[in-house]
Length: 330
Image 1: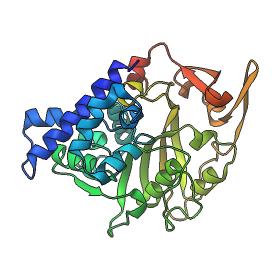
Image 2 (image 1 turned 180 degrees about the horizontal axis):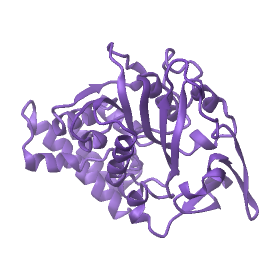
Image 3 (image 1 turned 180 degrees about the vertical axis):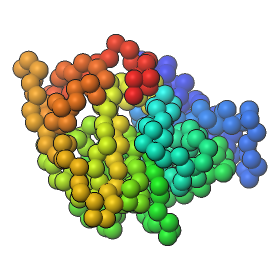
Image 4 (image 1 turned 90 degrees about the vertical axis):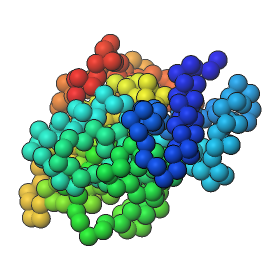
């Protein structure tokens, strides 16, 4: 059975791409921007690219006709990592940045997708987005013509001589690496690479506010956290409920909102409360969880449990009865 939400997302994406081709070099008017804004990437929509799925044949055929071979390949690869941000999280994250005293400046959105954080930026912020998928980058440029959209892999992004005051966004997550010998010599997985590089491109004293996989904090091996602590302090973290991204991106991934501050040269580090993760037991199941959430249990937005998942893996789960209100709880 094909989830109707998935079908609706796919058709909205196809309609946005069709309009993008019709626009050419012309700017989109208000009605056309509404159509483009419904584009949500291909994260969680792997069925459309599966030739065995006859129930997706019509959508697959339309997409092949619209995209060239290379763009189709990038779209298919985005199934694993292109999970776009629920708009409900954008304003609270911007509010957090402003609440920490940043009222303007130059801002990086790494892996910007169609630009939800660019669109939600308050006045006074100069936005730069990086997006590897050419179709998605073109849509972001049409939606936000005043922003600078770089169509490239974040692994290839190099500073242009100016620091960023803030980095903000929702990084791709997965157990694979992006080649970047300068900013990821330790070959951390993609979500940790995006975090580390965002910190490196943000000036000392600047903020990095990102949504990432819970494995950034929960991984048994603390190597990445120790690497990041060399230059940045964790201002705060909030663990979102499982399913928080389901409506926008069809994913049950467990994620955290993480806010880091890059340390000034010579500044004393804050206590390293987020270094270690330890086993947590839920009945017969155990999972590792960062000790930060033992100190601040109120920053877990729901009830913790452990569920047996695919391939007999045990997954940490956060259940919230008010999933629709999560954005208000941040």
